Image 1 (spheres, rainbow, N blue to C red):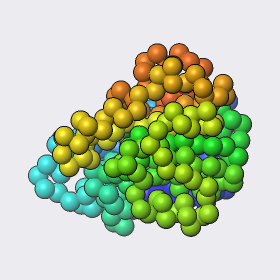
Image 2: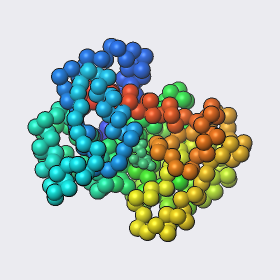
Image 3: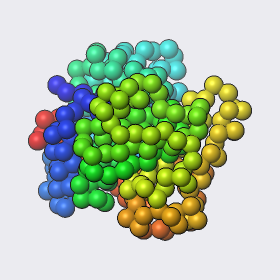
Image 4: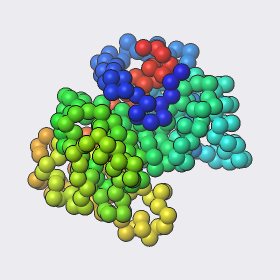
Length: 303
Ligand code: NCD
């Protein structure tokens, strides 16, 4: 039995196979509409979510399966003090696969150690978010035709942004990626991510001003400043509008730039950018459903 806790639980060839399967599903969704008949997915969301939870649920429904679960900790027995592992042992009696989001880093790993069904980490605190990474990778593949030989800018809250951490780890498996890490000094990537970049001899720079590098980028990955992870509100208020992408700032960017964002957006991308052909974040939302269909099939050993 396989779980997906960190993106590095998958090899590069497994990621590529998932992307290929996702692309096939996009081409012929009807061919997959019965694959999970009789199977159930549980979504255990101890933290807020729109896209991740609903795309998992839509994915399972489109595979012909069924879904159950909860969308906030206070409607589950967590509110009575039940441990994550007891919750998961319980839900594993009712479902064939579990997607779980939790505010504590490592909670899905702890759950996986006690679970009799596959656990998918749908985001653990400020740590990792591997299924968003699969979404980001299939989007890059669709937009660029190929994952590699590109300059990727990550902009915003690189310290707490779990999607950034997982995506950097994944892109380190591909060749020719140049990383441009754009953040306020206080929100730079955590040490273990910088170590991973160094360990792989990756080409990377850490800078504060987006304007200085925007013309070099092939992919710009914008992120939300993660208010819920800050220790005090004053720091959040000071940093929240560090970057606001506007059409004016995009004037010097490449015509083939792909702008990604895991969403939700707060202020960091002006709404006027949405109609620019370089904006890919709503395409990402749709890609997320298809790649999760592929992942559910893999973890249920249906491919
Ligand atoms: C991200 C998350 O939850 O980490 N959202 C998502 O899953 N698409 C990004 C965020 O909340 O800023």
